[in-house]
Every structure is written in structure tokens, then in C-alpha cells.
Image: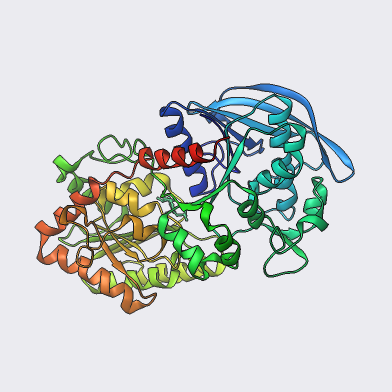
Length: 488
Ligand code: ADP
């Protein structure tokens, strides 16, 4: 099958968060399974060009309307980790993608609307007729709208669009100028069954447009699919999702099992696997030495997370106190974007300063994250909501037992040791429901007690997690079945 993937990120060349990893991992697996896959990205000035091979100018002098102008753009081509990538490079003084960062500009809706139209123009003018255009998140949500409203008549008739929702908290809400800018008719599209925002009668909701116009809509776990249909996790789009539920499915994300492999990981002191689990002890010792923690017979509880409201900042802070009060050691690696959250954790850092059992590392550190997964016994994931979540899957691959809130993709990947209908070989962690200190303690307490009192059973939980298949192989197969079902 011929699949064109359109997104705002692809690791490692353009990555802000999980979206970049998902596009990279899924594309590699789809290609491995014999499909023709190409990715189209903006040519940001902050691309990591050292991870692009054979970058060259592939097409020049293409144009798309933007307001009253015809804006020229070029397309460059190169390979990222074997994936064929095209980069849309506008040649105008708007400098859409020359801002030094990927998101966060006041004209984000306009920049990505331009990108969406440029992608379709590129496909049309270079005679590409992929079977599937796979779009991601609000930034590319106008692709299915533009394909149907404008490009079908121009001859881009073969592709069907699948759109993946990674996080309903970001919907791309803007004034209707965004539609006019790229040649769409606001009076036709600003209706409640099309792109009119559910909250603001003057605004357009780009993500809603993708849900309405795409041939199929996926989200990143089965449980999150259920939550966005039936709870306030739909963030205002429940009614739209309900009317299109016949074409909505949750497909859980995978993780890159080559990059996250304790048996080969070059960043950890001692490689190990299910057969050589004692190897973890050396990693624990090394991490303690590196961070100045005591070498004691205590479980090492960890958190590796963005420090954001979604991730449950209050419960993370409570987990630190609770773990220390329960005779554990604690390591937290996290980065906050919002100053008030950063300040909360700086306070906590000051409170625990000098403790031989606690280390908080505030910032982003890829290498340290590998070392924490290799060393830790327990990972706490107390999310308020969690479309999929990768850290719990990575942790399990490293023999760390997750303690997670029973929401979103955490429900589809963590199976409670005591309260699950799964077979014994499939349970791998601890879950709690209530978003409260008592809720967290109900699960973290069970994990800690098990570590102290029943080490053999705790070891079995580690092994169960390590033996789970969280690779992209299964999810890619599910995407292919969806693509097959909508293909023209
Ligand atoms: P998100 O919502 O942030 O995408 P996920 O659980 O899906 O959450 O993915 C988080 C990824 O980012 C994991 O690979 C995790 O190890 C990594 N990560 C999060 N915070 C940090 C940090 N401060 N330093 C290094 N890696 C981090």
C-alpha cells in the first residue's frame, strides 16, 4: 500500500513530544511490513538536519493561494532513519517555519493551514495518488477538508484520509480567516455539523473538521476512544465524535523496541534481560552513585514525566513524600513548561535537599531517563488523563513495575496485580481510580508492600511486564486493516 503521512513532527528530525516518536515508529514499521511510506513535514529552521541523509531540492516553484497572494514553496527530499521524508519550504516573507521552534507562535493556525494546502498541492502537481493520506492532530486537520472541498475536483481523487487524534486538549481553534486564507468558503463550512467550534460561535475548530471529513478517525488507545466518546475527555467534541463513531477506533501506540532495549542499551551501566534480571542491581548501584543516594536495601520509586497538569503534578508531589515515608528511595526526572509548576517542584527540591534517599532532576535528560528506567523498581504515572502514555510501556520493558491511574491508554497497557481478570502471567502493575492522595496510596502502597514482603512475586510482575509485546508490530497491523477497509 502507498501511504503518505502528514504531521508536524517526526523523530529525530523534528520532535517536541510523543507525536514525533509515534510518526517515526509507525512509519518504520509500516515500511518494514512492505508498504511504500513517505512523510511530509514543514521545513522548520530548527530541524535536526544531522539526522537527514541525502537532503536535496526535489521540486521548485509550486504555489498555493494564501489570502490574495499566490505563495511559492519548494519541496526538499531526504531520508530520516530510512524513512523517505519531504519538507515543505515556503518561499515568502511570512517566514512560516523560520521561527526557531515548532509550535507556540501566534499564527500557528495560519502556518499549519498553509502547510496543509501545500501538501495537497505537492501531491497533485507531482502526480502522487497515495492510497492513504494519514494525518495527525490539529495541525494537519485541514488536509481531509481541503482534499474533499477543493482537491477532489482538481484530480486528487484516489487517496482516502485517515486522521489520528493524539490529544483532544489541542483542537486548533481560530477565527474563520484561516479558512479564507487557504481558499475555503467559511459560510459553507461554519455550520455545527462541520467546522463551527462547539464553544465559540465565531470560531472554526480545525480538529472537528478532520473528524467530519476524514474517511476514518483513530485515536491512540481503545480506552481513550471510549473516554472521548462518553466522558468530558471529548473536551467539547463528544457530540461530533458520537455522530461519526462508526468510523472511530482506538489503536494503542507502540514503543521503539530497538531504542528501548535493556539488552543492548548503550546508555546504561549493565545490559540485562528477563534471563539476567540481577543485572538491574548494577544499574541501581550506578544511579545511586551518580545521584548521591545511599546504597541501601530499599525500593527505588521513580517518575519520568513532563511536569504538566495532565500528568497529575499534585499526585507526583504526594508520591515523593509517600514513597520516602514508606521507606523507599525516590528519583524524579521532569521538565515543566509553566513557571508555576516549575516553582512547585523547585520548592519540593529545596524541601528534600540533602536527603540521601531522594533526587529531583528538573529538566529534560534523555540519557538519565534510560538510566532511571534501568535502575528503578517502580514507576509512578498518576495522570489526570492519558491518551496513551509511553513511559509505562518503556518502564515495563526495563523490568520496572508501573503504578498508574486507571485512565486512557494506561488501562490498555497496565494490568493490576490484584484486581484484574487477566491471567497471572499477564498482570504487570498496579492501578488506582481516584484522583486523590488516598487513591494513589492504595496502589503505590500495594506495590511497596509487595517489594518488601513478597520479592519473588514482585520479580514475577517485572518479568510479566518485560515479556509483553509493546512493539509497533501489532498496532501497525491494525492501522493496515483500517487503511485496507477505506482504500478506494
Ligand atoms: P507525553 O504526554 O509527554 O508524550 P508519554 O508517556 O507518551 O507522555 O511520553 C513521554 C516520553 O518522554 C517518554 O519517552 C519519557 O521517557 C520521556 N520523558 C518525559 N519527560 C522526560 C524528561 N524530563 N527527560 C527525559 N525524557 C523524558
